[in-house]
Image 1: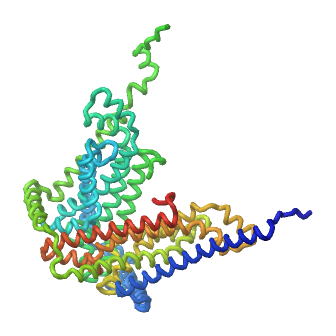
Image 2 (image 1 turned 90 degrees about the vertical axis):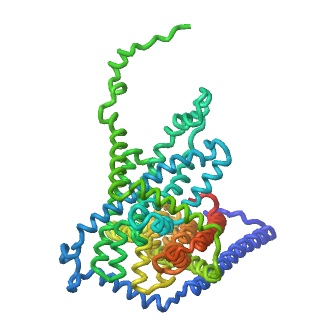
Image 3 (image 1 turned 135 degrees about the vertical axis):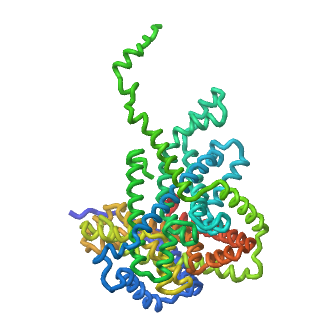
Length: 294
Length: 282
């Protein structure tokens, strides 16, 4: 029971085969050229960053032994055999962690308020005129492209050392990031309610309030919670430049080789970040149901 | 034309009590949450030593700084800054590539359709989570301790923190892959390794390539800041110029970073489009 497979006459077949091989060969060639280009770029980058891979492998041993060292107490025993000694500074560190959380909370909320005020001007469909849209968009772009820690560096000089600079840096950066996300949410909103409200003779402000806001508020809150998660991480390093929070303590511990302190603070930061991630995830699910998670 | 019967409000109220009288808890929830949020905000302002006078003097100081920044001017060390910018781009490229190379095999171990047993998957995922829980700057500091100051520490910091992020993304991409190809390979008599190589990898490679490109792009941003703690690149110059209050140079450096980031965004957007088409640009 052989079934016949119809085969084209060889002239046609040869032409098709040749075309197929040609296409494959072109694809291969493109792939090889791309690979070679990429490797050339890597080599160039390796020269630029002064990397060589022989030293990498010797350093990798150092890296492992670094973790070995930060998991040892001063008397040479493992950290988990003597928890109170490991977390000897937990009272101070917890207070600083609390400060870190407050910095990110206040920063996120301030950023959200500014982003909220600005995004209606930046969104395509709700902006009252082109020039404020252009202006606000460039402003938000600037605020989100310059890294938060650069703002912190500058604010530390303007506002003095301390958590205030950290809060403002996070607020500015969040304004930029949230403003863009918010305006995208607004652009996806249904415009029919706006027309409805407009037709009753409402002003721009009230059409925003009664037609757009009810549609977008859930998205706004969801994005703000996500941003809060990110900002907790960011606030944990604000102390590196003197802008408050646990980072100050960590940078001192790392630079002065207080090995067990490094691991203790790292553990506390990681646990805090986990807890925040889990609780904001829970809150988002509670507020919007599982399907609204973005 | 029949007149619609007007419903009696009293009767409706009686019939659907839960519509008219929402429980106290539901009615109070939103205002209570707002009050709580504001209370924490107020407490934060007090605890973090905000004061109107500090705010005002800081803002006027900031205005002065902004005026001093104009016009942007590199001073005499433009070649140095260009070299530092090149270093930053190198750090981003090398770090991401290293992370991707390391994350690809490990992420297979974290994917449900490759390793069905949770005993192996669980620790791998937790390792990814832990690595991601620590900020890139902290990794940079740790690596500086291990390999010394310089761009190499930056490469390794980006590599390790992206290893966590890419590992998670890769394993999700692998889990989202179609089972049919894998089953086809198995039906043709392929081994487990063949299934992965010929069934999974061709499906996920374009997605992975897109993600790696996106990370190179976002790492250009991060590579500018890890220099602030001493891990090489343009961030080092920026932090130095801020500390010595050379504001014109600072604004020039910031502009340079913005232009470089925009250029990389544009290039990688084009490349991603060429590799995976419009569908997976996320």
